[in-house]
Image 1 (cartoon, one colour):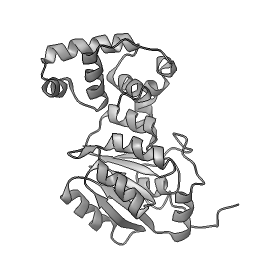
Image 2 (cartoon, one colour; image 1 turned 60 degrees about the vertical axis):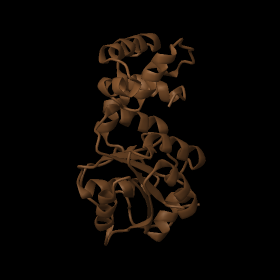
Image 3 (cartoon, helix red, strand yellow; image 1 turned 180 degrees about the vertical axis):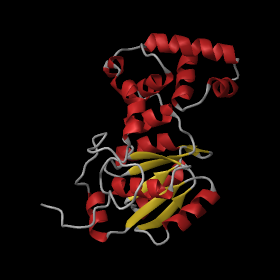
Image 4 (spheres, helix red, strand yellow; image 1 turned 135 degrees about the vertical axis):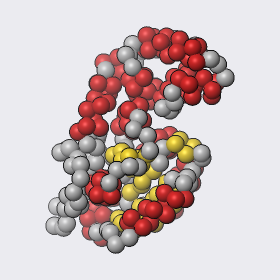
Amino acid sequence: MRNPPGKNLGNDFTGDQPMQGPATELPTNSTYSLKTKKTMTVKLLIVDDHEIIRTGLHAMFSGTDFEIAAEATTAAEALAEVEKATPDAVLMDIRMEGGDGLNALGRLKLDHPDLPIVLFSAYDNPTYIARAVALGASGYVLKNATRDRLLAALKTAAAGESAWTREELRRVTGALATPRLSQDIEVPLTQRESEVLRQMALGLTNKEIAKMLGISYETVKEHVQHILRKIGVSDRTQAAVWAVRKNLV
């Protein structure tokens, strides 16, 4: 059945234009996109542990086609609010005290594969971006982006389309296309190497991993080198994608 004619939700604002066609296999006929096109009001779930961010978003969305239907401050609250508030789209932080937003993304996509989820982060981290693409996020917007960029990304995502920019995808294309990542090969990582890899996939630096695991910075560097060699990748971003596909994070 053809969708009724309506306002083009993806091009109302200026700013970075998303690439044509989906970057991942995002359905364009989902119940979420149909509902958005009919009502023209997008119900949002905001997930961020900083009150000042949530307050600012309320002011930003005032007078727009967006309505904040619910808020959450932790990953667990986000999972519950999706069931209760039935939002049309989710705008979610990554590094929160109450849990990793990327892990929440993965869990939400298992139960709600058609739900558009845009990551909203202060960290321009290629590891985060690669994990977000691999887990099926609709887009990734930095917290220092313009208002127009955020609104355009959300409108595009709510329409069931990809809000990823060419530049974002270019940065992680190599990691996602690495042949070794698609091979089902068992890699004999030690327990400590697995722990280090999980922290790498969460986007932590070597210094942060050393503090988290209570080991020296030099020891972490050595583990990282062993991990990259064993799994057959050349950098941390590729290692993060490998960890996601092996369900290590």
